[in-house]
Image (tube, rainbow, N blue to C red; front, side, top):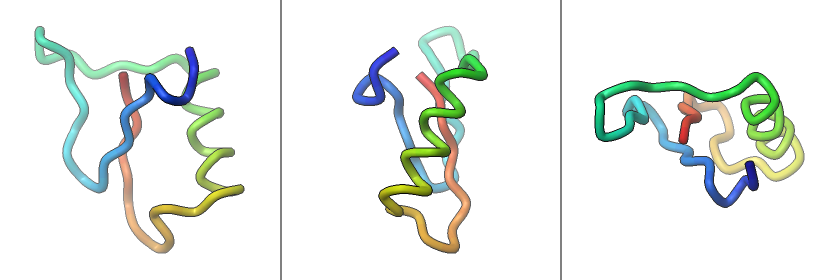
Length: 50
């Protein structure tokens, strides 16, 4: 899944219309590596989902 389709927020849990939260290990890894390379949430918690 392209990173543009992954939602990042500070604290709010990312859920779909059914109230479910999920992300693949691969997409989670992409989001974490992107944050390491281009920090947007320095010293903050953030959530990842789609």
